Amino acid sequence: MMKKEPPVASGLDIPNPKPTTPNAQVRSILDQLAERFSCRDFDGTLIDPAELEQIVTDGVEAPSSCNQQNWHFIIVTGSERKRQAREISGGNHHFEFCSALIYLCFQKGWTHGNFSIVQSVAGACYHMMLSAHLRGYQCIWNAGIGDHHALRDMLALPPNFEVQGALAIGRAKPSAPAMKAPRRPVNEVFSWELFDRAEASIYPVKPAPAYPYFDIRNDHNPFAQWDPRAWSWGQIADFRGYSVWAKSPLAGVYVSRRQGDAQEVEHSLLPDQLDGQIVEVMPWGGTSTVLLMQALSKSARLSVAELSAHNLTFIKERLSQERFAADQVGFDLMVGGILPYADASVDTVVLPQILEHVPDPQAMLDECARVLKRAGHLVVSTRNMASAYGTLWRDVESKAQIPNQGPFIPLPAADVQAWLADRFVIEEQIGIGQSATGDATILTNEECFTGRLFAARARRE
Image (cartoon, rainbow, N blue to C red; front, top):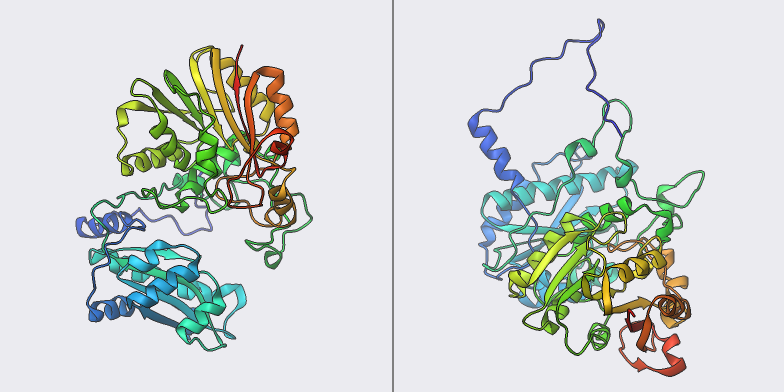
């Protein structure tokens, strides 16, 4: 899509002034502010309370709606209270190990139109973040703070006040990733006069005459388009490439609670000798890649195929944090569902819960068959619609917003088995997990079709 040109002044317009060029001092400050990035790995050292108060003082220089300043900020520094904050948040480990948490609150009942009081608090929060950054500290703002009732009790928050987020401030550990999450090209996020945006960055929604704001929540979004067949490959790549940065690539920290121990069971299907050229397709955040690296023989080479360069940057850092040698792994972009490898060139392909994420799962299996050598192996796992998890997905998850790893619909295990049998020789197949989340019970025979996950190892003849 072509971007519209900047407006040209007409005879009735005031002529455009010449653009101003910041002097060296101003440019230096702007560049320094642009270097700020979010940190989730703090060393826990103390910050002088007077300096924390000064950071808040800097924050309230921000504008507020009608200048009412109906905001309130609660600084939490006690170890036990930070640990409690971590538990309430549902697992934000940095809440416990930062130097200070600043809870961002506002008084309800004033200037709610257009969320003006919420915007006011957000402006103050960003002022605090810049103040902390210029003082040499790291920070991260979180909206995911957990159960608000529990927070009210912890903070003694009166009923006419609301908490909308928390700002964690501290000093980064020396090993913390010094990575700024990628920003879209600026010409992708603005336009002159009228709305104009690249199609790949506009995500599909279910058709509706209108999309009322208050009908859309994280846990209930009736317009969310979970069916990957309604998404282009470009849209899926864009979504995953930016959303992956919702979590920092820290070693051994972010493992799905839904997944539980299932990843190790999936990898138990890998060939006994994992050698030669190995390809892992669309692992997203790299948790599965970490375990796969542990299983490689010394002479094996792993290639990670992902949809966005941002995904690959993230996975590289995750492997670096886990202390894996970079010379045993390569990183390749996959465009339009086509694996970037020659015919019959790969010894093993691993699909870690990916078939349910792609627009055409059978076409993906065809690609795997194309790149595999004779007697090469495919190890595949997929979330199973015909399971307790499938019921949870239909009744609960699919009613919510699409998760950061992208749109998906669980696939019936029997269908996946049939697709595999049409293209490969199935050597082993199992179900994983009797319950909807967490457990990694191995199911065999006919029960394998009822597990939360269906997994198989298949051989190309």
